[in-house]
Image (tube, rainbow, N blue to C red):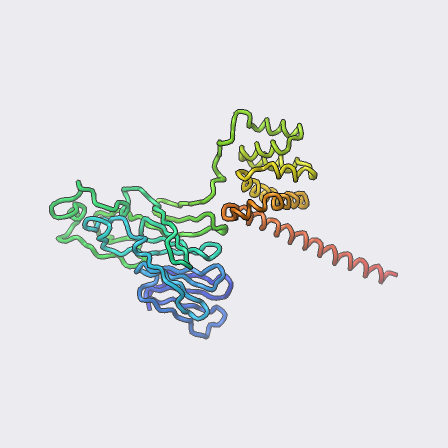
Amino acid sequence: AGPVSSLAFNPLRGTLASASWDGTVKLWDLYKRETEPESIQHSADVVCLAFRPDGKTICTGTIGGLLSFWNVEDCSLICEIDGRRDIAGGRKMNDRMTSDNNASSRYFTSVCYSADGSCVLAGGNSKYVCIYEISQQILLKKFQISFNRSLDGVLDELNSKNLGEGGPLDDMNESGDEADFSSLMPGAKRGDDGSRKSRVEVMSLQVAFSSTGREWATVSNEGLHVYSLDDDATFDPVALDEAVTPGAVQSNLLRGNYGKALRMSLYLNEYALVKQVIEETPYQSISHVVRSVGSKNLERLLQYVAKSMSDSPHVEFYLQWCLELLQNHGAELEKKKGSYMRAFRAMHKIVQTRYDEVEGMCAENRYAMDFCEEEAKLNL
């Protein structure tokens, strides 16, 4: 038995998975304490694991750079992805010349599934974070999380000015007769406490996908890095001119030009202004206003409608906005569903939440009316 390196709960069952340096992953049933846990044997030390969102598959990573995917029901191997070449890169101080001669192996120390379970995000003791497609077992893309040359493992080759007759000058400056090229133990976060000189190594400590699958984040030595497919948080001045101002939006609202006012507010990308235009648009004019919105502003409008509906008492009013958006722009949403998926999910979530609230309120009123009817019959 070896030290436990990672833990993960099954999202749908009372099962806990533990990864260990002895090369095993154990599945513990939390409600059957007397039974022995199921064990999954690996050929190398296991340092990370993660459950798929549906709880049917578990992904494990070993110090050999191998990602393995297992069926939770029968503990059978589904497929494997060899990520050693993908995560390789970056010369360390104790490497001879280039990153191809690493003294210590590269491997993944953190892994996470996407929201739909089709992709996996993996990072470790390297400058790269990789995204894999599971069914095809291919690398979709890899990201370099740092370009800071003061960190160990960022440069791929040794600078010629640091190369002496006996090898790298970094090794000559170390105390002792010979440089120590021993690799760190799996999971170790620091080197020899007695060494006189050290450099911080670039690595990903943790990776995570967002619930929408449109963003992911990683934690490294330099802090938190957030990557996104969307740019809705940035100011977009492409369609702006001197006439597009908050004052012009208010003027168009007073004159009844609701479509123009909405488009201008979406260009300015100010939530309070967009919400004001949406709520001041008459109910009978919603259909005409929605038709005037182009595909460039469609995703923003979906997001703003969902956000405004979350705390508004005008449920029917915002449901009409949602209905008109789907009826008038359904073909565009279907054609580019990947781009609009985040906004559509947000709108669907808030509509479902408001539906549950109204349903609960109606059920309480019905029970109250039934009680009043029964009481009236007793009094008669």
